[in-house]
Amino acid sequence: MKKGMIKATGPFERVVHWCVALSCLLLCFTGMGMMYHSLNGLGTMVGGMGNLKMIHNFGGIFFAISLVFTIGMWWKEAGLFSFPEDWQWIIAGGGYLWHVENMPEVGKYNPGQKMFFLVVALFGAIMVASGLIIWFPFSFAVSLVRMMYVLHALGFVIIFAFFFVHLYLVTIGAPGSAPAMFTGWVTKAWVKKQHPKWLKEMEEDGTLVVYGEEKHSKKGRC
Amino acid sequence: MKKELVKLIDLSRCTACRGCQVACKQWNELPAKRTKNFGSYQNPPDLQWNTWTLIRFQEHEKKNGKVDWLFRKDGCMHCTDAACIKVCPTGALYHTEFGSVSMHADKCIGCKACITACPFSVPKYNAETNKIAKCDLCYTRLQVNQPPACVQSCPTGALQIGAKDAMIKKAYARAEQLGGDANVYGDKFVDGTHVIYILPEKVNVYEHLPVDPKVPLEIIIWKDVLKPAGLLAAGAVVAGCFLHYITHGPKTPDDETTCEGGNKS
Image (cartoon, rainbow over all chains, first blue to last red; front, side):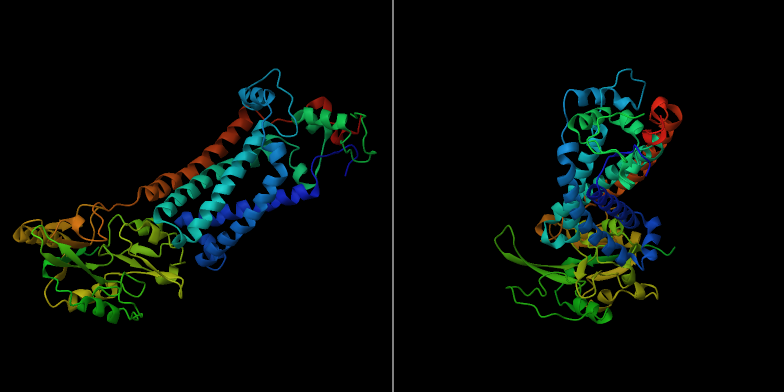
């Protein structure tokens, strides 16, 4: 680890993130193996479509538990908008879509991240509820089960599309972001660019952790 | 492709002898299960994984106050636009060359989607095998030019099977001959079923027989709208991300602050 890196996430945060992320991906692909006949080969890879269904069903339980931790961990920071600055950010398209002169300073989570969190939380919960009803259809009215198929497919459309936005931004779209979820340490330059208000807040509160320096350092390097 | 076949059920000729019910069990080697008398000659009470066809007994009070006994042979209608085939994730349910809906039992994973989707409540779940079961119009018999077991057994001529066009023609001729409320059921919905009834009474008189059966709207939204939309949306997002990268560009930390690790100044 290089000196001067800034601690962005803790190990618990990263473990929860990867639990929900990997189980979500597993569910996307096993689900697609069942939705698209051309992807039935995914079932063959695990020894048959019956196994694929089982992986999807029990993977869903793992996802549900991970989702509870995700929501519990992030809803205060990422689930609530703070106006008016978040509104300004949204109007400006986050500075991602066209040139914006004076972007409002972003805190720990920008409104785009908050929206992503809310979509995952809301549709994740919908996927869990509809998935359980589809899993045990005899315990519910047929008309309800039919609606759950619609919701389950709708949730997939939205979550799967959002996944690619997420993937783009953390790789080539906003370079320097990914280490936050691997090592937990990001460069100061990245924090300054992406979350300047958060950096200031941490400096003021003395919660900024810089690698190789004593805690509570208020010295800005670089 | 062989000619599409239609099994014609003339309910005006059915005496509820239930020969078809027994013949079906015999040919398809379906066991009997203990049932309870629920105050009707009808037995079992409903279609089961081991009962693919069933004569329904129904008491019907006519306009003149007299009570009529209505019999209806229930079972798979073998739809052309079959909801069960639409929802089956593994291709276990499929259309045969005769237009009937058959099933590769080894492919069934017991997801029960077809049970939810079927407008006629036909597929039934067998918990022991974790598979669904239903009438396949005796596919193995059709393949060797034999009529289905139920048709073979019918002593009154209420059941017959033949080329689709000829059977529909016959059905309308018989309905006209019967007169009154007699009508033909099956050729006008789900793109035509391969089991067609001649009903002596109006459709809504018969219990458990939907007046206007169709593939449920939810299934259409799921399979015809959201299923392709899933790929389209993901594709559009990937294309959009690429366009964003080559036009607007990534959001990189500013040059003057990019000293790696922020500690080289």
